Picture (tube, rainbow, N blue to C red):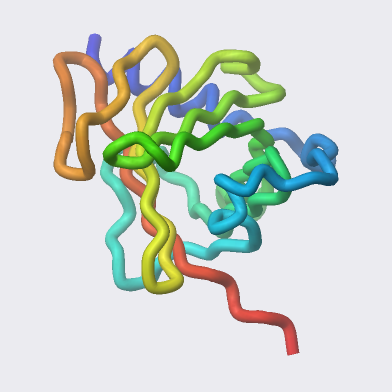
Length: 157
């Protein structure tokens, strides 16, 4: 049952959005979200979370209040656009993101984030789950925690 629940919310997050563009981001960036803004790639030094589906996370783009996961499944490239909010005053810092399309559209994922030394770490749980307590919080009952580690994409030359 636990695997079925995990599969359903992971597939919901990673439902292919096709070639559609991410939702229009607000022109004004929330100062609390400023450190997260930009193009992030997978951290090659960090292993992929076993809770992630068998897709290749290529990058995460954060612009304004939009956070878009870009990934590949075989030869097919897809994007999962979300809207997000952060609470940098929480300890640890909190992030919530809500898909704007797909099977989990409108359902919020609760997580934590940390930006340090050009890296962005995020851990989260699916809709209806509790927020992880810290980056070592692997699971809570049937709630599986997903961990991703990203690095800033190199500036185009």
